[in-house]
Length: 360
Image (cartoon, rainbow, N blue to C red):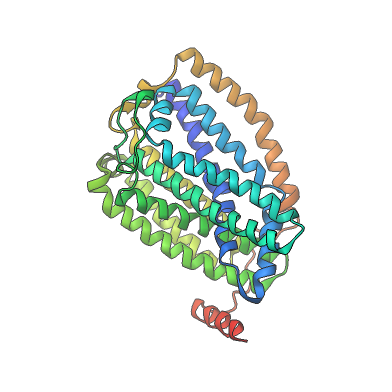
């Protein structure tokens, strides 16, 4: 494979996709856990989620906007085809994202308890809608079901994006978001000295991680028949990434189980990166398999070059700014990478303790 400007551009866009999957996924997962907050810990969970998201949640949209604009400018043919054919699931994802952002603001600054509860539910359900339909859309592209008919394509009502494989990947996206968020919130609660809440999210992280693994295995099982190009690419030139993804997932679960929460957070970020990286490498040379290759979909070389120069200038400004933001609000004064926290016993003991407390 010859490295060309389009391959450099798509690699940068894939980095933006991975970053959005990690940071945006943590936010979406927080909405899932917000929906499942009940009992005498409900108020504290809402407060933890608000404090965790409040300073940084809006910055996550930078990567989504970057991804959309980059795809539009760098690969207009692919952009036109995807947004036309997958208009309905992408619109639902967009509606969910808008509702989620609005609900987060209104629930935080609501004056009446009744209205706050309503916005809480909107925030939570929107946090489910968006990652699910983004996952479904990604699976529709990966499965090779999107036709090469350009912007004149008819919007598909469901036959291409409501397949067993696409639905599995949609639910996998939800489970991965829940796992990432649970681990992030475990670290947040530990930093706040809320050990009981940290134990709760540790347990939830382990359960969500197990569900993610099961759905990932189901997706692999469906891939030979429903996404043959991706399956063939994994076997031919991405099998090492597949194995690495599995091993990192096991390591993330192990570090979370034994109380190395900060290390578990690093590993779940790596897990997400390797999972999406495996998809990208398996799909080479296509951007929309099996019809549109990366080089064929690319804009002119001059446009690609100007786009990359603009991205470079933007990243010089944006990345240090975001790192400073996270350092101030998230990492400054937090525990060390290899710090081990008390785990409160084995997973069955933790679950039993939670049931005992809930019964009181």
